[in-house]
Length: 181
Length: 232
Picture 1 (tube, rainbow over the protein chains, first blue to last red):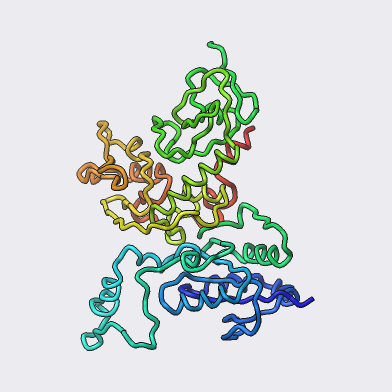
Picture 2 (spheres, chains in turn green, red):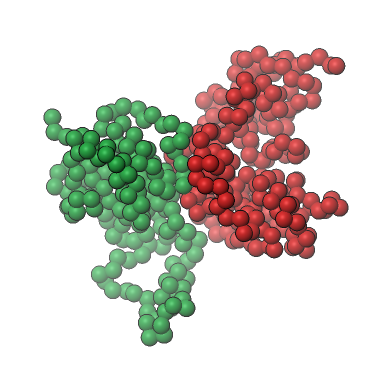
């Protein structure tokens, strides 16, 4: 039987959840025995080469590219998991959600004291993904099957969730595993 | 001494002194009923409804309802627990609770309740309401995190008995309002008390920050309510 295939992505996140994933330490050797990786920043594979069993999503959606990648993952992954506060509820990027987008851009690119007068310009190149009106949790864009909160979720929580999914057993959630910070 | 009142919680025989509320009686029997707006020593107001139980089939707030003989109380039935879980989730989506950036994280009762109920994501959509932060000489008032429990209103007074906190507006626009002149006269000790009485990170004493390291905070190791259940 072939090994289950895993893919990961970082959308509007800080890569902290991927770092926490790598915090499984020597269990990474077990992981390599258990699964194969497809599209992921860890192996730098850019496109899906086969159907994926489990997709891990870090970060919410703040721009059009995030939405495109998230939909691409949904189409190619049997199970999609929101990993971390940003994927689950928008996280720190969503702090802009109570401020109109126009004000955010003006503050960053026009009015900030660190902007030189000759650089006062709001970027609008077609190669730059367009910003969304606010930051969206992943489950407001596509169907998400499981949620792992935390900033970041501990390596132990990610490991427990991943092995439970691979082995098809219920999650053993010790009290200390689920934290929002 | 008057006779004890006999009643049951989830089928377990319990006894209480006359005048005790359901919450107090349960606590005395080592049974945890979650509370958020209630705080020991304050007059209960029954506003958050997290302590709701079913008594002889009817919903009641256990922090305000006195125990009467023969009550049959449901505290951990799936229906009661689901009701509480929904309230916790609504409180999360109605405010802007960015736990990773909050000084109260790990010591927050709302967060601790969500941990106890193992809420991975609220079933309701996030509202991201526009709220502000007010600064006073000794403390900050973070309206993004306020759950309108009214604990600060009841607990914090000047030495001559004047209230510093009050409610303003109604319904969805309700918010905590502060008497600026009285707040300016608040001592460090009173500001500390205000921060500690707040179940969430809405009242923050200035110049304190992240005082207790992760791993040593109130709810890092043990769920909220476990201190009551250990006495059973």
